[in-house]
Length: 352
Ligand code: ASP
Image (cartoon, rainbow, N blue to C red; front, side):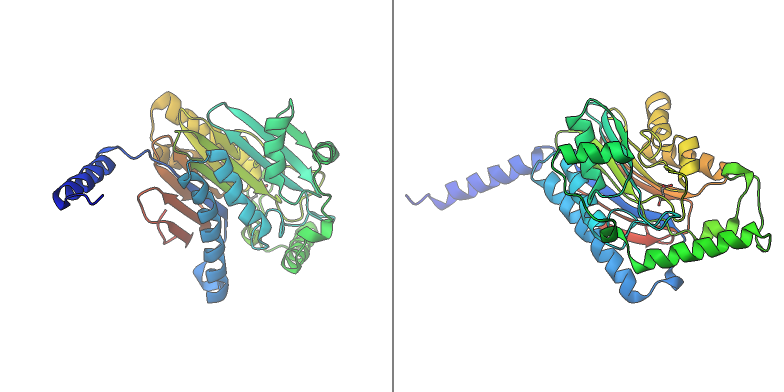
């Protein structure tokens, strides 16, 4: 049946009105690929483009989940998986090497709706560590599993045993070599760098610190149901020893989500981020002092800096306000909030 033109016009006007008057539920996500000495002058145009393209792919993978009304947790996993699978970042493939020359990876995820969390540390054979962190949260009675135990748990769930070589890249081997050389210099007293009082163990090797390329990955997401989630995945720090674990899998330090406040993922010098309980500190300021996300993050990063640490944080709050902040030279970062264009940035002079 053919509708009279006036009726069709009326119907389409009414549907347009319904679309514009229904308030859109805020949703979106923010990701990082690590903070550190990331400077324009040190980056080739090709590498710059490769980083931006991979960040965009990770962002799109997470956004696609949210757009289809999927849960924030799935969006976090989707975005982080892209970065774990890319050799560009310090997570999954391309994770940094420990002092013995292999990768030990840490990851954590948190569900802001339930305050459930899952974390793993020191795994060597898990292709996508954040997947295992989620399984710890959803399929075990525990929150935090480490090393062999975490790997046995993965085996019991049918995870593939990924050989150590899969994760290792030439670039990370060179970084380890360089870190060892610098360490040796410091050990025999020939380092020409100032040692301050602020670092773990009471020593601070400025030069060594500036050589570190971080590159941890993380995501914080808000879905259309109003649920928040955060996840972070890392190889930790180059040349780490003695089963060292950083902030990433420590709930409240590297990773935190609470529907009442925000979802946060951190990257940077983990020892300082643990001591400053960074992610929870941001949430706590919002909860107890009514601060907004950006102000809370700036205050927490200032505390980290005061202790001598550097790095960055990303977050999203329950209303869809997004934050990316760092006190290092740069941070690989991107965000996409519904109704706004996506943003991808790397250097300190780009939007945060
Ligand atoms: N925060 C991580 C760690 O200390 C390192 C990083 O962010 O790249 O393990």
